[in-house]
Image (cartoon, rainbow, N blue to C red; front, side):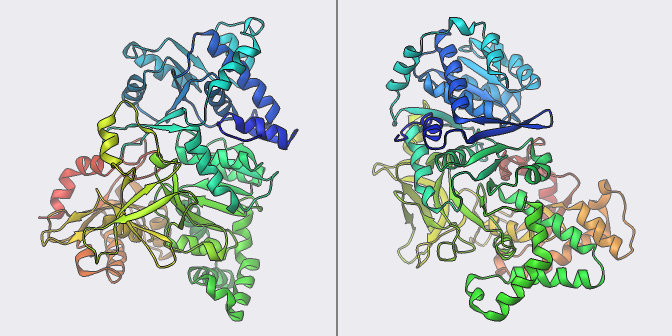
Length: 592
């Protein structure tokens, strides 16, 4: 069958691959597996329950739960009933949750745990439209009973079929609220066609055959994972949901996936752990490890044509890099990275290890992919986000004809319907010719690969009137083993400065190897030896930067930046405005 609506995915999966596992998750130490037929039946039961509760086409229904098969089953049920899902991050504060649910006017909210249920109950008096609040349950029959409905008293199946037939591909399917790095989140309206067109455009380049396994751990409420999930199911892959970020290593060994989607920060953590283990090796093993890492950082596709390099790489893969592959389950054929910029050195070394990592680019408003690298040497270029996907158009809006870089504009079948109940904001970003102004700065190279240089809103001027893009400098700083995160500031100042979050484990290991003592981890930011180490790291970085970009002063911070403490978004991006306000005193000291 032709897939025009998101809930057609399990129906098509069942027709093409009957009996194959579609979704799986761990329950009481065992993997619970569901076929597409089971997914369809459970989705239909919940959809019929929603209809019996009075849900009408166009009503909004919230989902706030960790990733699970039940998350997708509930989402499909909402769509089948003609309603619109409003998924949000489980990590949102009650105030943030209230803002989203009040603005969208949800009538029902599904939660995935007792803690989330209590969080919603705490704001329920402020949600004027909310009528019902239920917990998603792995036993769907119990979920329906929880709604106060007997399975035997559900509406007739024909009633649901009529609802489903009324849903068209261009109808609004979901409201996804942006993570709000620069302001108040806006409700992005995406249709069935928006998301499915993005999945179809990326399908020809998927390096996995039907029957393969994908591991899912990024939040399903984010359009990146939501689209990837649709893509994997469309192509006959089974989706296995990780138990959480803290269990990914174990789940990789259990599932042995062929592919997964991730954000750069998680790959950076994997790489840093590998380097940490390598630094503890001795003698010949350490020499082989260091040689392999050096070889990996030099990786270029054209070098594979060099017999000597190919021979050396083959040897490094057998001696060192096979352990990397085993740590990821042993079957990985591809990793898709998105959400923020991927360090080119990481892409190179993972490719060298026989683990292809490709970077893409997109926004919630574009469903999300605009451009992406693919899994062949001809379709992948390090340091870029790949070529523009089929059906999508991109043009660069430059200030001067001789400029190469400018704001990236795009349009295509993935472009949103607009911002929910906000026509003014919609008109600000989509011009009269239908071009969406992304707010990102970049250019297309001679081969059609898109290069992102920075966010338009993040670029600042120094006191001399020169523009400085902070993100490339921050990414360079994070290449240091001793720097976990960094923020570059310096608007209207005579030099850039940096707020730096230390990688305390790596610093302790470094000084232990030198047989030097350090204070406790809570006091590392005050230690003169540590400051000297970071000063040397920045000094080496500055040699690769222009005079106006060089970091002249820095502040070492005591605490790690996390989503819970407010400095990072759920996709691990910096919340710049929040950080600058939080560390206002420290920033002032940097420019005295």
